[in-house]
Image (tube, rainbow, N blue to C red; front, side, top):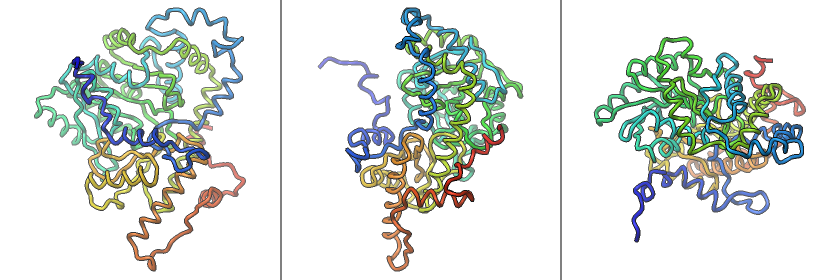
Length: 475
């Protein structure tokens, strides 16, 4: 047998994680309302499908945005020919402007610092290559996105050191936790080169407040290490408090801007993961220069650049989209969490993201990660829902699960909620003698659940869904 590389034969991709195992379970038996009504429902994919009708309406009204239309064909030749890896000027300008709008126009972004990449995955790896050498380390607060183990480590040789955050304070990032992780890295003879924060958080769906961000900037300045701010969920904040970007904080506090870098994408905020639009925005000239050269390995297609530039240059569309997205996420989040609470399932209080951090600690047979995996297998194999266990996010406490709610239509969501309801009733009956178990009706239909939702919000069945408080404050 011919030998191949260690990267090819190793497990750096992390496919043995239950996070990816859940995807495999879905792919082998995907739910379909007619063809596979008993299939696995995908609730492990953080995808934003709630505004596609709104976006498709714009696409139909702007055929010039497509090169494959009579209105856009005159741009075909110049777009199809070689494009410099800097990216089209109009693309960089439109993305920079959109990043500012998402942050309430409280900060401006320089198009010349926009470096494109093949999605946030490529952007993270690019930053890792620019900032650290093999064997050096980044601190990462837990729980964190499982893909970071692949994106930042696999090909770069960089190590990740968890900053352990706990449920007792809602997983806040504290100075004590940062110092403990930094010291642990030193004890392991790892040179810490940076701190990676995800704001808004995946998987928590929470945001970092201004004081926490200032404390983080102070920490990285004192340690003279880099700060990477993953802000790919910036436009998914649907309730107050408003999102605060690291780009705002460095305007308010004294810091070495050469240490500040932002990773952004259109995959979550606009629901375009298939377009592979990733962005590195660095305040460090050397990093911008290096990243731009590295971007040759993962450019955004010129056809996609043309579409995105046209779309994001339409101010009326962008302003309306940001409002519409917040409204849809607010409505779905409120309905989903209310439905779970009706069967005794809680979650971490959140105001952003495409998911909730579901608390199933009371369902564990014992407080261990083995028990968490046992419960997860039941949910995957019997309840037929792909949810992601907290251990795959490096959570320090068993019993938490990430559940995505924005990647399905209303009918599929109702099937998922009914399955959860059925599972909880079976669990309660097994735990409590039948004569003492006060059972609600098993079939909570869409109309019944909506009636409950409306009554809690003091609305008639024909009233509009309540507007997001964050949107109301702006209108």
